[in-house]
Image (cartoon, rainbow, N blue to C red; front, top):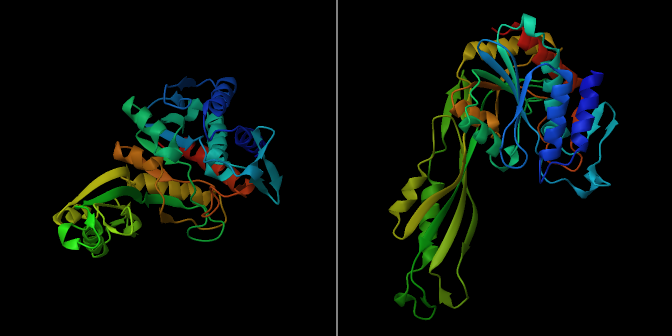
Length: 362
């Protein structure tokens, strides 16, 4: 427990919202000092991903990321991130999302005896998760392809207070832009123009009537959504607008997308995808059940298979063929806040789960 706590405090204190090099250096040096694993650092932008491997056979990866979102000013002191403990919790930017889980995975990786492993155990901490999974995508392009992965994003508190569940699916996000073009004219002579805002409104009506994407994973319903979040058009009160843009947020589900291309049936309307973070579904129910069994052994609560609403790097890994689940200490609503924190007891629970899973999976 103390090793996880001390390492988590160390990692949380190191700034990593603009450049992840320094915290990546710390992760790499710790792994080289405390393990005999094959430790590597790739050339992913903003500091590189840190990877470590030991054992042989089918590969099981413990996966995290060490970048964070920009801290609140209250979370910075003397150039470092403020970090402290109070009431059994570790406070600081990245404590929940997700350096605490990275620390738990590192210590579990260290403590897994290579002589007793029936698999290749892999540790991976990526850069760029908060900006679209750039580190994970780089690693995958370079050949990173574990057979199985436990991603340490938050899974605590879904089925019940304080229970750390096993996420078997999560939504993705497709952000897109609908552009309506028309012809400008003086507002006193509307018949001489073509109103782009009207065309955009017709496209919004199409979006409003679309069915939300939905599916099931291991009997659990996964329902997405589609909604207009921004609209911008026109240049002056007395000019018929010639351009109008509409921003659309879609929460995607495995194997399904909303039929947003239907907006292009409206004259003068084009649709482009700006970001597409993939959803995740575990492709191996036996693996998901094994992780759940181990999770039940290390806590008093009764964890369940659950669905997570947020996109993570697990989506990129699953899309590349890795059987993924998510199991981590962060609770809903903890990440990205000015008082971000994580339970130290739950960090220890995650450490024990990761270590026990490494010894039992084959």
